[in-house]
Length: 85
Picture 1 (cartoon, one colour):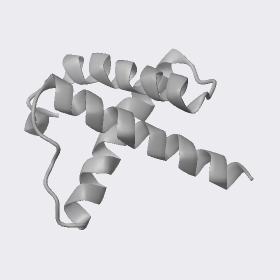
Picture 2 (tube, one colour):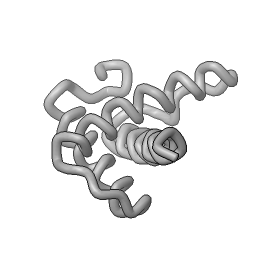
Picture 3 (cartoon, one colour):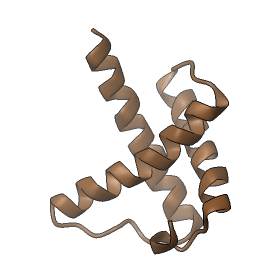
Picture 4 (cartoon, helix red, strand yellow):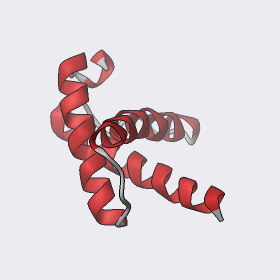
């Protein structure tokens, strides 16, 4: 979390917001705790994907963490939908 320039409490808040935005965008029905998990894990997953293909992180700070968490959470929701079928 500190690599993105945010602390743990900020990561929870931003992760919850990113997860909630992804929930609204993907039209899924998850709870508050799952939104936080999706946002935080989504940011970690997207950073790993970007590193694997040779790109760096999207940036540092709150906005970059929010964007990364949102995109990563959308990816996780899509993967979850594929696995349920």
